[in-house]
Image 1 (cartoon, rainbow, N blue to C red):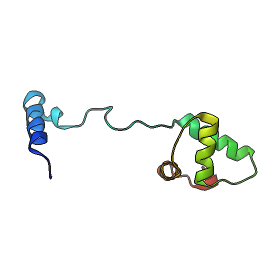
Image 2: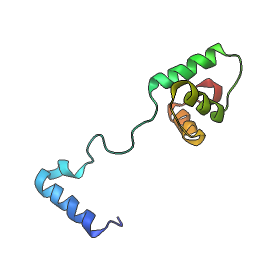
Image 3: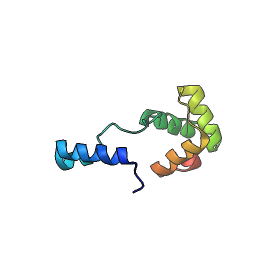
Length: 90
């Protein structure tokens, strides 16, 4: 697994103290989303009302300007792919 000795010790201690439950990651770990469903709903509404089309760079800029949510265009594209939405179809 390419773990350091310290990581292995910590995992073994968690296992001894908590059993199998100690081996699973706890909820709430990792990075938090910078966007919310309401942000995507806002963009969907904009796309429905406005006749123009947007690319991921433009949508990321609009989200930052209108909702103060900063996502890089690459990350924004990943969010769209994860949601199953692409481009102006959001």
